[in-house]
Image (cartoon, rainbow, N blue to C red; front, side, top):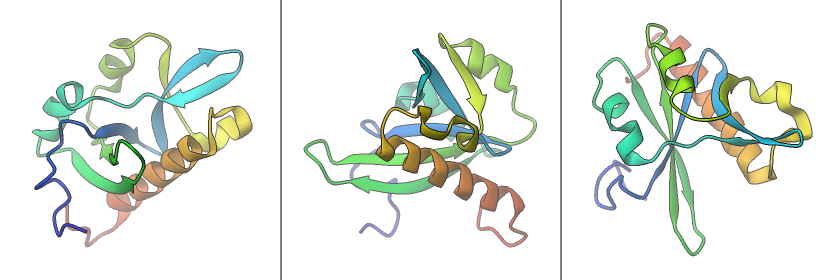
Length: 129
């Protein structure tokens, strides 16, 4: 494991899930099914470069893609309406409110972990932001 997961392998192929206030960005796939609306590196770059936002490494999925996951914890002052309006059928929802409506158990786990770590970073007094 890298000491700094943003180094060496780069961020270009990573997935970034925006989280704020216990909610994460999700897409309504229709039929009552929701999936996390990950941002690509190019979509997330302005938030990554903003010192008010917190990039949180969630982990790597060691499959054929060796996918790297990050939560992008947005500050309370971030205009989330701009974010949700930028993509079709997206909104910020609490993962807990979706129950079994999340597309896969992996996606549900990523959403819950992202929101949990995001809340910890928002509330921990001595967080290493």
